[in-house]
Length: 138
Length: 138
DNA sequence: GCTTGATCTGGAGCGCGCTCCAAGTCCTAT
DNA sequence: ATAGGACTTGGAGCGCGCTCCAGATCAAGC
Image: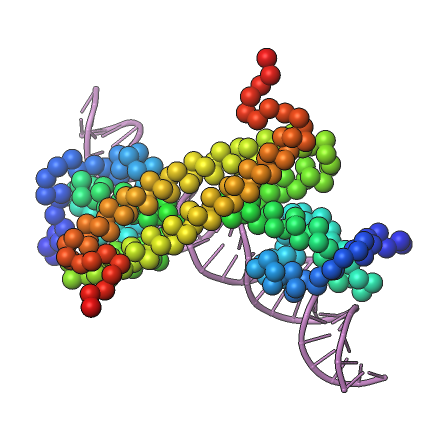
């Protein structure tokens, strides 16, 4: 059969270990993401080893942003499928991002409320102990 | 044997279903938290059914705050053990809360950075589509 | 008293997001 | 050419935080 997938068109062509180091993901996780369809099949050497191009890195960084803001794998799979289809799905992707962003903003507000309440509790304990907040007495 | 645990000293004495409704936790989760040692053994009826007092509710709400801000069950177990010992552990609890708060604040900052980056991406897609943000054309 | 729905316990099971493994192949340096 | 480390695959396993289940008991209304 034909080889199907070419090497990276041009550019760095990082090994999986190098991408792992740059992204903080483990090689296992990178392979898992690829199996899961989060990443389109990445370029390979003649011997079938992965070589990541700059565009793969950029997409991974975007995925990480989604993950860090709490998007589930299955939602990211959905997004990746839309992206694979092409520019025609930009409205759908935009809708997903807007919805995610709205949830994220609500999440941040909620965390801030909770942080404020924890601060009250902390201050309460501090006065109980008659202690200076954050400062040690000389 | 003696009955060991008295009924609630005074006050509402809610059933597990009522507490579930008020907290948003399921009855199963409430029992799980008790088994896990997050909640001290709650008052019981003569027939061994749980009846939650106001103080139990308040503690649960505090636990939920910790959970919602990302504290793990095992850290909450640690906190609950300290609390069970008594006022002597207030400094330790204060230290835990301060550390948690610090992580939480860092978390919020990170989310805000990511939200800003997502906003840029959203705006990029919007200009690609030549679309009004958030507004439908009449 | 009887019925019906709520609650009890201990333990098994589950979905998520990885993480690890074995057995084999590849790549690089010498 | 060869050694030794990096990489490959498919699949099993894991830790977390619940969630569900069976079989039994309890509580409340009629």
